[in-house]
Length: 545
Image (cartoon, rainbow, N blue to C red; front, top):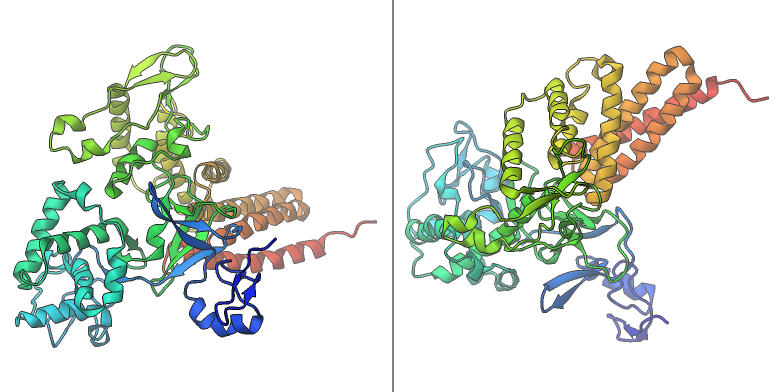
């Protein structure tokens, strides 16, 4: 029986809910329409919940399908990255020394007069005017220390000018206690706290505690927005409550105007926790867990807890015992590492004393030997020539004697190879050999399937690979049609269209500023062309008797 509640407009008892979020009740369509202007800003199939261990998190209020938008949210605060060359403080575009406009009130440089009037600039403009000395930026194109404090300063400004926004910021996690005395904490005290006190003369206005807390809020909750180069930082409200999982059920992207979009990558049943991956899902477990220490979080998700990473052997090392076909893995990757990262003693940050054991012969190898092997292979990747398919194939061939075919290093190079085949010739895929065309198709399919297991919500890479796969399948069909006739080509084009349709679905939420967004647009164009080609090919075939 549906749960009853009171209509938010008239308080009448009713069982009817908003179909979008299942979170509010309406007694009639008229009252739902009447409330929509206020409700649409928070309508989401996810509600905030709280747990003593997890803190605040988001829970699905209904069954959510792949591709459904879970949340779209404007930022609370935006600002330049902490380490950045001079950028426009209105739109965050990189500034060129010969093409700047200075704010008449404070002297900060901008890309245009219009950007000097952007409301986001008000905090640093206000405090610069207060110290009665304009800013003068003389070096461009390289990181500038004056910009390190801007985003934090914009948070602090809200304390005295926007109490509602200040309260929202203060509810976000800052991990002050965990951050204290770390290298990052000490650097922030010098480059941000001291700078705000001395440059803006604000020592009597903001305490060290307030400044360092805002540093933590930006560090823990800031999202890098990749719409421009360099990226800028945005802090969001409800999205900050989404928990991490290395095999997340959602992905995030951004709209052209800087809103964040959270969308489902898989089916999410009612009552499930909403999650995203805070790190790179194509890194190995050890690298992912170390990176998550930036958020003072030790992951023990399903994927991290399984050394085989859901049977993929993504971190597997080939056993070197003669005639053994097994692979080496440790008993577990779930070893506490936060205390090592925070420790001032370098000795405590050393390698763990774990061993790697073969799945077949049970031979054991020390972690030190494995780490040295991985370090050597990492160096090999770092010096590989760029945009060179031959170098990629040599690496894969050479390292196949050391690593599992799915190993993250093998996958990393395989992704690069799959995407670059066809880019070296002006004729595109028409100029590649039969063997390399086959390699491209096989790699694209294999990695897309691997992602479906490891990171099903990683729609950007999977969508991009499927776009490459559709092109390889279509080109294969074109070549076969030259000797086997149009009927064969029709089958390949139909298959390529099916792959392209899935690619377009996966990339649907990507903005045109990103390569994946441009691929999404091209996918739509290609689908129209394929429909015309299929129609033409079908008409040319003889009618069945």
